[in-house]
Length: 150
Image 1 (tube, rainbow, N blue to C red):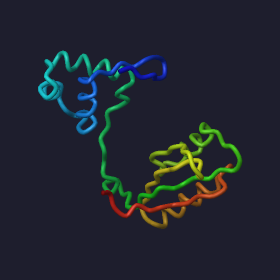
Image 2: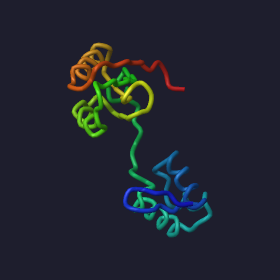
Image 3: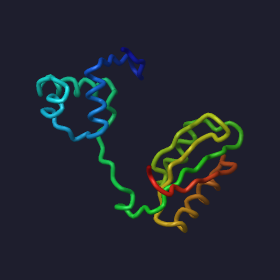
C-alpha cells in the first residue's frame, strides 16, 4: 500500500506494518529480536527499519516517562477557543512558548485546538491556564483534569 507524505510517496507492506506495530510497543526492540518475530534476518530487518526512518514512517524513537517522575502531578486537556481565524502556525508559535504544553492539536468542532498540559500542582496549573488565556488571539479555554489513565 502507498501513502502520500511530505516530499513523496511512502510504500508500506505487511512486514513493514508488523515492524511498526512492534516498535510502537517497544522502540528498544533489538534488530535480532525484531527479525525473529517477523521472520527476517537481522540485516534485512535493519535495512527495513532504516528505510522506514528515511521515508518518514518512523519519525523518532523516544522514551515514555511517567510525568510524576519529573514532578508533574497534574495533567489536563485544555480546549482552546480563538478570536476570529487564528492560523495553525500562530497557535503553534504560542504553545511553543509554554513549556507545560506537552502536545497540541488543531481540531474540528467548537474549539480551535486542544492542548495537553502538565503542571506540578493545582496552583501551577492555574498560572499556566492564566498565561494561555491572556495570550493574544485566545478568547477562552475549557479544561478537563485527568483523574486516571485507563
